[in-house]
Image (cartoon, rainbow, N blue to C red; front, side, top):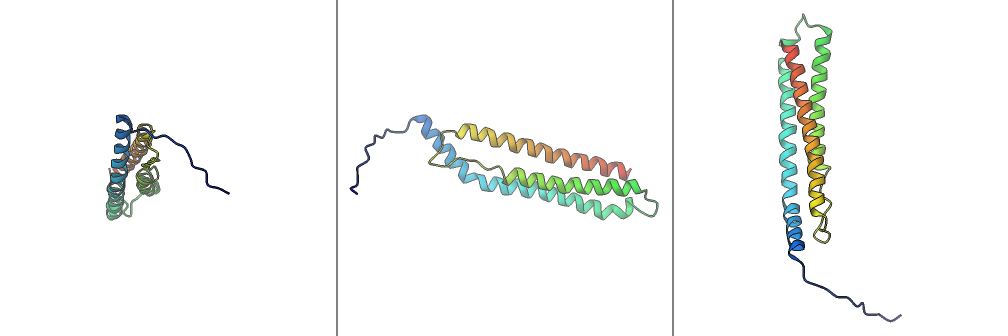
Length: 140
């Protein structure tokens, strides 16, 4: 079987294509560090809050503690753990689906991932606030 030459034409990249390619290049370079920083921040915050709750549980849940107070603190701790899980998902699962060879939809991809991360971050902080409110109710 003889090799047949493949005929093709090429053209120089347009300014828009160069911009998109540069955007993807910067995105790929910076993505990992942002993910690690975000996850460390929210996970550390959640586990610190759990530590505070557990350290003060004897004060809040002494001999006179009502059963619903124990339940509320258990729910608060579960919410704080859920906050850590949501933060980890937001920071690592939703990565960009672009590469240097396929960068035509980089703007759409940036918007998609930004919205997913925003919603998950909003949910994570919402869970954290709800847990804090529950802890405050038990402590009062």
